[in-house]
Length: 108
Length: 123
Image 1 (cartoon, rainbow over the protein chains, first blue to last red):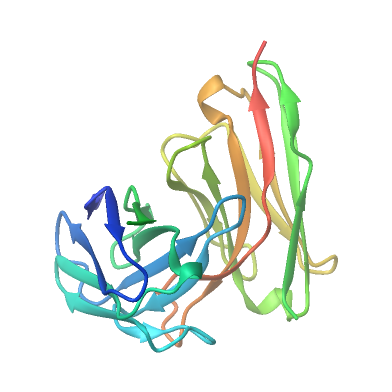
Image 2 (tube, helix red, strand yellow):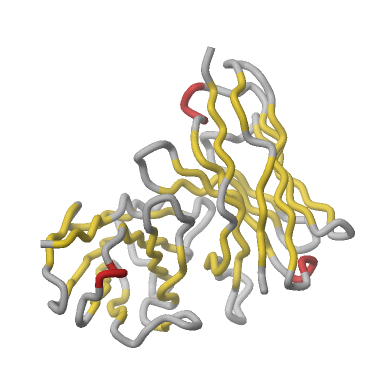
């Protein structure tokens, strides 16, 4: 099973600033990585797939990068609606499909 | 628009059973793989099960293998999860999610999710 590890667990950033979230895989997942955003009481929302391709309707301030075992989600200028929990998910070697434990992005 | 609506959650005693349903609309259900994903209270996401578009290929997480059964009825645009021998650690919100493959059938990316249904296993 591929273990996904996200860091940091909690990230405090001011609105308008840049946020950088990390996800590491226990073995290479190539570019088969997705990012999701989840707000309280809501279902997750797909942001990024293929490590760097934005899903339909996702603003350009969200970008993904990386391949192999190291990945990054960057939010270039934080808006109030971006404060949420973010999860990465690998789909390179499955079953099982595995998620990271999440990074909580909070207002500084 | 794509809609996934789960139902069937509730309170059940340890060892009991429950059947979750997910009603799909707004897309050709029979063209898509589907999955169940759960989230324990205050915790992260855990993939539970996957079923191919025809139902011929099925996978489970080790934590539910032998206890849970995924199925689908393409004529009714519905996905199901039969949960038996429930344990306290199965307590979670259960989401059904549509899997998008972006042209490669090995890809499983969840592009639409339902709102979830809460399953509580407690005596």
